[in-house]
Image (tube, rainbow, N blue to C red):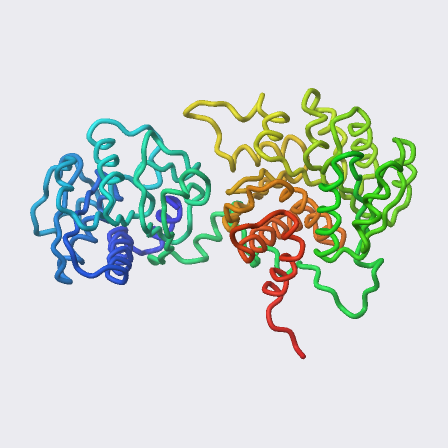
Length: 486
């Protein structure tokens, strides 16, 4: 965004105009949400503080009782911030915690998205006081204390009711824990053209159907079931529920056929439960390899309920050896924890890995998940893991990141908290497999599945268990498709 600002200024829009537009957007949002009341605006020493001066002037012009404080010296302000500070005719107080006493609304204009060091001294005291006051807070661009790139909290951070950010969302507003501090996130245009953003070649996006909707495999009359793909799922011998959830989800996602390969001892359990999937007896590695010789199985899903025996490792490698699409989840990842490079070297075709945090750490922690102030963000970790492994990596969580080996990445923001329930990951793996079977490429299938998974859970609401998700997926698909011709 700093580069976008520079390009816009070079194209003829003065920086003071961009700052005026930013402050105007914040003031408009405040006036839309709240009636006039004592508002205390805390400005920092940079451009975020300059935005705060604009907000103060505009609210004052609209009759609001405004008090403004500056962290640092007025003489130290530079450029656009100095210009807009000179247009503020009211008193400028020292930014001390007691300045906030009596406020019925606080505008946080202390630090913007570029903060990259822990808060300390008076700045930390101000942030703590704002967080503890219990009055509404509007943050300018990002709550102070949140890293705009990673979502990391630098010691402490303001918890805003609303954050008004400019032009585009920032990664730290979607990644945890930063997202939890933003409250409602409002994106305001300030005069930076879409063409300018496109020049930047950004490769990170917020998950949305606009990214993959044009590639979504809706059924049409010219197709028969074999044209809509055939998913082969390796069923676990004892934990049979996981693969059954995956099978139902792959079918609901639109796969033409779904088969579950199960040990003879478990075959009756699968056969009774799965009336719309085929259940195939599969005892041992050789039987699994024999199934893989059938080219109609265009997607293989391994891992849900598979167990961590050595045979699972061999079955994964055999599936990857076909160079057809593979979805690897749960135990299919854990069995390579001691020798992850064996897995990565075997990935020669399209592959999606769906680790949660613990599974990710077992595969990649040695290189990526270090615990320090300069630790890579979740976005950076997922990208590095995808590049290293050669697979699309779905690093799950409330802020799931989908990353491709070429550097593209998508942050998902629609997952409700009720998705934190056993079996929901098995459903997600099944949706990915079902979409991929119909021809979506690995990255698009993963992104679409993650979004649909979140939407289905949100449509159900509280009380969700994983068994509810495959059927709720139908409602999410209907909503995604929209009205259809009669």
